[in-house]
Length: 403
Image (tube, rainbow, N blue to C red; front, side, top):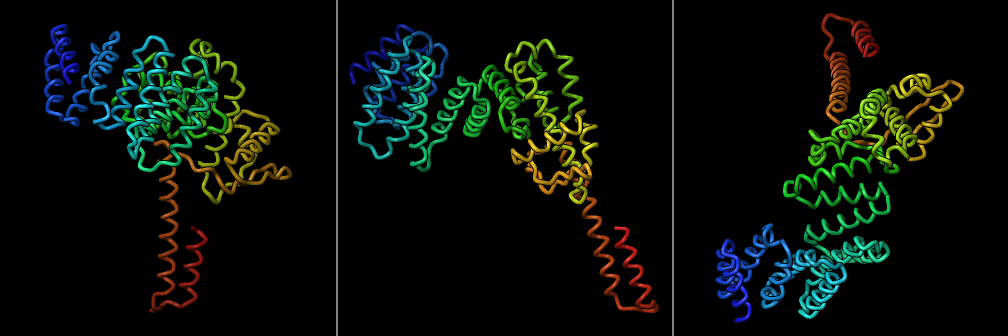
């Protein structure tokens, strides 16, 4: 205890601007208020001035080690991960974290899987930064198995796992997997606590991966997430508008955006290399929008109508429909003799405001038809008074025919 207090005293004298912080830490430490001390430490290590140089490394080795097994072990793991990022050499940081894992094992506590996994995931992150993708993948697979075997897992563990998984897939240019894992990361993260620069970078990466990822044809979830608004008012706002064009299957809008922002698009090699893939994807989304905009009883669509809206030949429209069938976006039958496609099912989507308004209009029309039929039945069942049965029946049949 004396060594820890001497360290805090020396730091209080060396850094007068942080004197109150060190005094508060010393007071809580002497009173053995470990929970309150943990909360104070969380606030302290978040200070920018403390994160400079090796200050946190010295804090850990000269102070935290004195009581590390007396505090919540997941909080200890969190402190250890923060400290590890201050090491200039990745190998030194990994070695330090392995030492922390040994200490966690030595506690013999019942719930040490969570803190150990949290520390291992940071090791995976360091391996990825070193370019060692195989070791990172191995640790991620091990982490996934651990998560599957655990219950009531702290959200920070899930967030860490999905974030590092997303960065692994990003390094491999696996767009769809990056997209899935990054969205899962956001599901376990409080977006408001993220920095603006971090949100902008993540929104940009998510947008690109949504456009380029295989079998990603629903942009509604991303457009509904608050992080996507980080693109607005920036140099890359054009990407937000392209996402909206894709989500609504608006081919004309997409082509106009490509013309207006051609320089910005050309600066993104992935978009340039996958130009044909992007055209195919927005044509498929245009097809889905054509189908969605029609009532369920009017889903037999002439191929010529699709060709007109997608600006494709009939042969290319048939290929487009077959592609949509193969990835299970729709179910239906192409009638080449009649030159039509009958769609019996469309994959559910997260709808935008305009799409919801369209759906509301169709529901109102459907409700109107039901009301008309209800009134017709009531008329049929009402006791006859002065009118003949045949006159009423004729009226009912006329009403049904009009509905």
